[in-house]
Length: 253
Image (cartoon, rainbow, N blue to C red; front, side, top):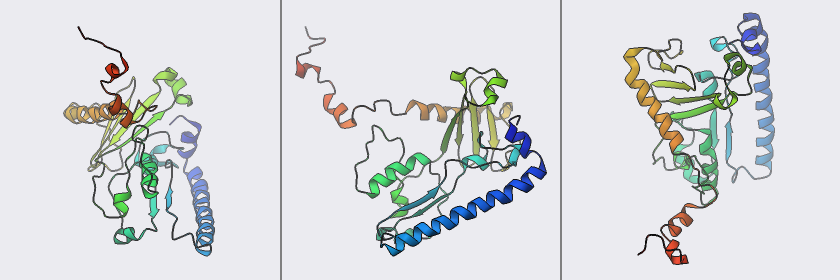
């Protein structure tokens, strides 16, 4: 909240001036998208072009007395996700609203599958969401994950945090949001009873079990990150326990 943007957007007159301008910029984007769509229609490419409208983050614009996007309240972590899939197999879901979790990293595998390209699962972290557009049969995420490296922000200096320790992690389920900050107490919000995220339960002893459960979810997510990115899973399987085939005999007597 001590960032320049936070101090500025804590003032109502700043919000009153900036938010209308921000809405104007959104209208400008809408106008330019209309130009793109018109070109696709005139060139006959609307029938073979998947269009995804999304964003990398939201903005506070004064919510929680903050500016910019450097934390994990709903205003910053929830982003638009509108998909147009021209494939006829998507007709059954066309116009639907799906409130289940999806993450930005799910877009790459979705595009690959839509193009009929094998997904390199040793590199790609996300899950294809193509099934949600077409047959609607598949397993959706039960939580959303996010993280932030705030080493470049003045907040790190004010808090006396080493650049290597300036890390924040968030997990959000249907009802809960948990934020783990290296070197600090966690934050916990009960989204069902406190949708505005104004009551932090991160130090409430009555919610220790919930904090532990959500903390374990973050650990599980990090522990399962892909780290063997230079070799495909198939090659790993083919080479497993294969040293002897190359004349390297270990353990034989």
